[in-house]
Length: 481
Image (cartoon, rainbow, N blue to C red; front, side, top):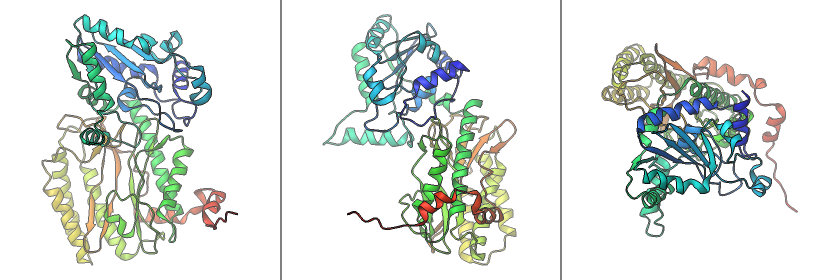
């Protein structure tokens, strides 16, 4: 246990929240690196850590580097030798001025770092080029990530598009850091083949280990508590961003570094948009609020969505709309099982949906039409390759290549049901873990039944402290003299 504490305290910048103190022990990372080396054969894998932050923000490691060693130091490089089965970590030499002015105690080359990280050697970054040249002279090929690095509140597609646009922009033209690194590798090792490491890493990341599941479970607990706090606090006259503040208070209270993604808090007609994120509208009496927000916790993400009435009570019409969506949504979760394709799940769910539709008492033809459209969309997706998006180190995480759902996969479903004429939408989202026997809903504790939501919203005394509420309750004009 002491070894883990040393690793993570040394690796964490002092300006960050204390969220890197119990991530994983060194043997978790060692096992991952062993799987990588088993797949690259006689080649060598090279992975760059992220750079310093551009301002006064906590340093957060990129996904691929974090997955392999958990070290949070700028400009680190990890080298995994498939032939020798040895791992070398390259770090910047100690900089006392940097310690004093910015990060506090860091992790530096030497025996102490070797013990803390659990690798074979930790040496000065200045020695990295010579190692590459020596390996190349020995006829070795190199694996390295081709995709752009992913940091907090981002999924892989986001930086990929950004850097593709940067390169194509006639007023910019920059290549990504990863592309620039490959260019330098070709210069240092002109006869070596440069191979994409991402498929190897992504294949491993798609199935979560028990320790990863534990961290994601906690991230989901925090996400759910944030949503529940917003439910308790909501009332007409508040702004969407005030509900965001409720969740962020909870995220920080439980040690999150930040958010998994921008807050998607939509009231009234804003619910029509799945990723509405302006969060500036005022809640009105009679509005439904769609709340989708989760923390970035120990480099892992969550993603949960609930819908609730701004005033704490569903109207009869809202009940009809909400309940048919809930019943149809839950047929999908009830149909999920391991070792089957997403298409198999959808086929089973549609049969259940048909039963729900046949027995549901509609009074508004617009709601019935929306529900029929919802079922029709699922009926047309029986060949689908996924049910939603994976969640892990990224909120839209890497996918497993297997055509079937297998134990250890975590993903969400978030199908929307829209009332086009009224410009309204309805969308839930849950964190689903495939197990050996079925599926576990990690976010099932977040109220979804109408009676449970109304009960929670009536129980304001068990939410934020009254002092905290009063700070946001009196919106006084500030006069500057």
